[in-house]
Image (cartoon, rainbow, N blue to C red; front, side):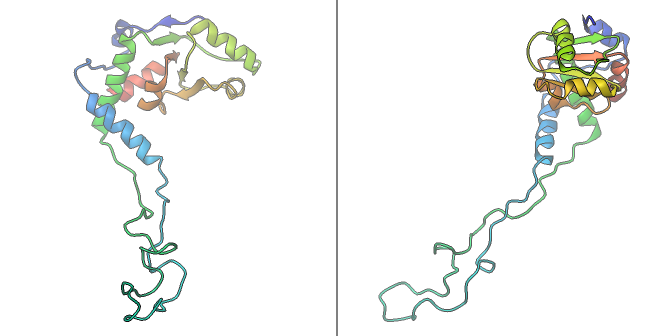
Length: 202
């Protein structure tokens, strides 16, 4: 399998809509922030003074001790007491408009193509399902680094061969996202995957 560079002319021929380097930076930022926020579980939780274990008994009498007046031992100033304004379970997810998603994808694809980080192949398949064969195929197509292989579909043996290669990832054209593209050193477009991307940028 030999890969050829995917140029701006190839993108134009495939009706892939791109934008210049002067537009879409904020869209990319907003989208990546949303991706990372949406992965947060929001499960951090601290107990207030009403939730920590303990009773409501006054720890010592109000007057005559020379100490400050206190109520129960669950007050926030005591060790083992409640927490004031601590984290509570919440939803961190963000929604990004479809137009912003398209703009971000156009900007990132444009930057990658201008940086000559995108290659294309007619087909990609590892019939024997062996990791060694998968690595050899990658070495013939791309330079060392994180490699993103984007196709419309992959057979089971190809997924099997790729699963133990940490620096390479197989992803479909309909599912690949901006963050994955930004982290890749080389992107390999397989077959009609470029048409799928073109439909997403239209």
